Length: 212
Length: 196
Image (cartoon, rainbow over all chains, first blue to last red; front, side, top):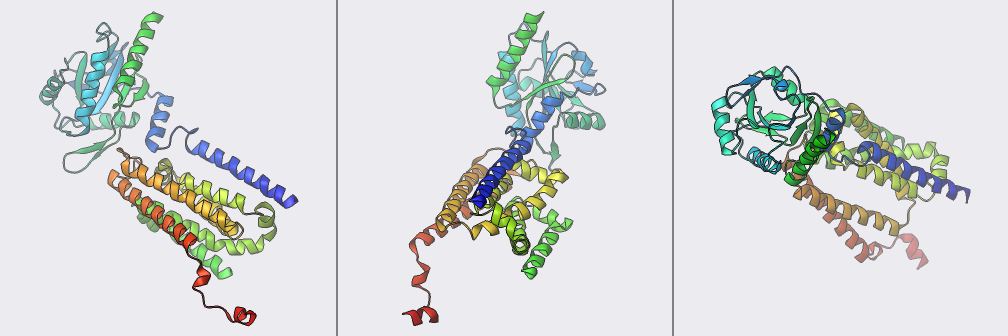
């Protein structure tokens, strides 16, 4: 009988251990893949957009992130030669753009597509690409980062993994990145869920307006 | 028993050699369906001597085998989480935990428990793992995105088919186990002849 009680206790201990193990291993039953764990980590850390990164946009203007100070920035990372994921990413970005009330556009928020392929994505190429998605080049800009060190630092900060496949294409992860007025990362949103992204952005902008 | 322990220990050391570990972990299906089971087998082999040295411990705490089987199942399911596959490659402490947990928290309790639990309970355990493997196979085959950052989609699909194959094998075993009575095919031993 005593043995049985000990065995029962052991079973209970094992179950407790199992729960603790799964709780720790999945960040409290939230992250079952390394990718979700990465997103949770980033949205907790809220890293700042590196201030020294120089962007060159489709109008050949160069500036740092301070150009957008005081505005929310809706960012995607892409390259124009991409055939599968980026067109969908940019198309969905356009759909989010269209759902934002026009009074906020350019005033409270700007859209920014950053290319991680500066060699091919020169301003002329970016200009064509932006026309393809009906971006105006002002409230939705497309830009490249010429300095490889700055580019690598930015991708590292935001956990964007870009792996060249050797044939001129890149394997990369895609998402919407929302940066607040001070340049800190606010959220990473699934780019396939346009409605969720649009609702979140509009809600943030409306709250901001209400607070003022 | 001592020999078995040495074989198990050598197997564990061999699997922990960096070139061997790197090779086995470079392919997703080998990582999950070869390296991990081999680690459990290493623990299984070592278990005999541990049981001999600590008979009271196993008698007291694993009297009916249920805690051991629970622990084994928890560890096995834990290592099926895609994130842990990734972190075993990128986080050193997770890799270390893999080499400790699979032999000692899965292999050892499995051997101690498997001889203690009733055949019907064994069938329940195998059925549960079949269902789990079907589900994991389906998940890995149909999931449209990479579940592990370190492995490509095509490897994920291969692993999915590996899961389905294992599940089918377990179902075949269960059917065989229900339909076939081994004693029908065994030569009666001398002892039973005398009895007859």
